[in-house]
Image: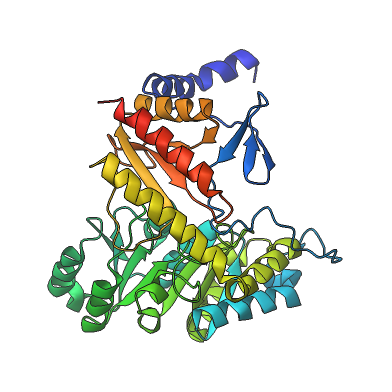
Length: 394
């Protein structure tokens, strides 16, 4: 096939990309260098990074201690890629989550999508929050269960659906993020636990943005809200507060063993690198050794959120839990979000503009992610900058 024919064949893709560009929705990759808490833009500009999910400031820390570890696992976990280091990490996660067992996945996306798709089967009812992470949404789509999407955080809608239809299904599953990554708010887990118990349903909670930050032990929102023993299946990531790479599932031994045997993203993926596995294990060990990291990021987040809520009323989504290190500032249009992000760059801050389809149409926003490694003065200057720029929008 000639280059001319190739061009003609994929002209429709170019037209779609142009449409995205016209609506300020086009995304491109920009190679950046990282220097501690800063990122270096392609033009050499150094910016303080407020776009990373490195909530505890562990991602940039070397935790290998000059160990002689392989860079790759070489095979899937079930073939030969599961090492003693993997088992030690699984044990540490099960201990942190206070569950019978845990299993590590090659990514958080694989853990979420694979778990939901595998456990919720034909003949089951699956209820999912409309603002769940894409990995949970894709898991629901891959599942053969009958799916129902409920309005964000609407436990009343869950109750109504269970009252109406629970008797028609063998099993029922309620799937939700714990902390919602684009809104910084939390799921009504107390209410959902009550419904799960009343209607004999199973609750799956994604702790990705809560692990390491919430709960006295750093295990997440379930611990923060006192429902840890009531949520049997919890999924999470190793790539945010843990500062490494991969995902995990923690729960009853039968659940974990079934996933090991039937979860395709786990069975058919190469196991995580021993380097990242070791880094994750040492990070989890630091939760109890360095609680000040968790305390600091929550203090920084609570202070900045309070200030922005006061000065920019109506633009900051509410949250029921203080100290969540995600603070969105809703500005409306895609173009406005890009402009505010660009103006913050000029002031030395990297704050990403989040646009549809990541968030609903008309709710483009700036998303501030805080880290225990941020300096209070830098957070203060960021707050002043956001208030000045967004207030000027009218």
